[in-house]
Length: 553
Image (tube, rainbow, N blue to C red):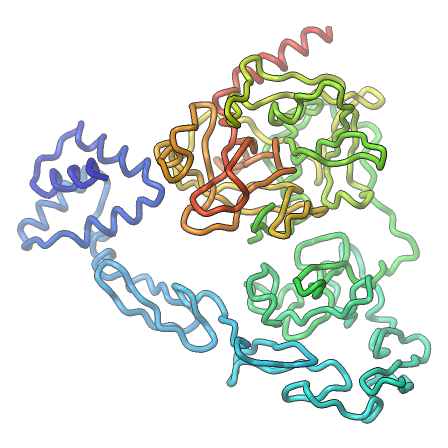
């Protein structure tokens, strides 16, 4: 920090030169959030007009324009406050005054207006009109607070001519539905009962998960911190609104919804079937191409905002993701991640491949580890190669990288599809602050392994910062780097994600920039995950692949 302050003082006093400029830029480059330094710099200047003009000329050496500085003087000029919020300048920063029910730094999120409210036998929903909440009651309980119950069958809760049958318990009843209606309230008709194509256009009225649980409303206060809700961007285009009907906003296998399970929010596929009598899954081509045509090009591009603190990944978003599985008496068990870099080669962490007795299997194209999926490709491992200098000392993994060769089936290894592609190998370093992806089936906040592929965003952190005493205290060497979010706990990679990729976008392609290696705990504040620096090993990877190719001929 002292070098940065000294650089600022030298610029202010006109003593700027190429060497100093390089030092200053280096400090900015290494900073985890260089916007903070700019804000500090401009707000600390108290100069007359003549000196300001001199400063502008000096700063032009850095490519800084007077327009940039003018914008800095008025932080409200870019209208940063959303949803009708008003902006108030405060020094070099700003403060947003948000109308109800919005909040956040820029009024970007909907606040939980249900705090302190009790909907008893129902759920509290957030709405955009006063009083900004309402109760959705389970029949036969009545609004406004879902505390008092009406008679079981008066009024009749059954729809479409259904007959209400009383139960001995006052709050329970059963609907007897006429053909062709079904559902708890006879609410599901023939037009609601099936979906066409990939189900993303399903707009039926089924509101029950396959396990029989009732779906949460998309505007339930329980969903405000989840990626899909009534208040998400483009909610209307996905058919999401103030209702609890099943939808498929992320192009999953079929319509789904959020449910409450053990007092936690979970999701489940819905009780909806394809409209055709039989699904005809797309099979991989029987005559596959010899090589993958491109690298790092997923067909799915949208970024979802669940890994540790991450999000349910969209099908096809991480098509290079590999599940390393070992044989157990109970069947194959996922234990590490990996990344497909060639048709027959998976890159992973060396510590995942240490046990030579383990019989390995690799699953590609997977989303749900508990289900057999038509787009999956399964291979046995033919060969395992660890880096010669891989070692472990005091819990630190050095040169933690290895390669796994797939055993071909009918002369072919992995086949390129929407769900199976290769990631690019990096040939460059990226600056601190770059936003990248982690993905995997590892441990989540509930200390359980996820069966659904999850992902999250993390930011690269400079080596200097990673080795600070409060972080990893000089334990990282040049074969490693760290990434995460320092200011808050919650987003991290964990056990089960070991060996899985950290991918970054550059030149419109995804590069495997890191491999999950080690860390102190999971999702802890100031303890970002540590990754193998793949750029250090690209020559080794190329050498292994070329040597293996020569040995085949």
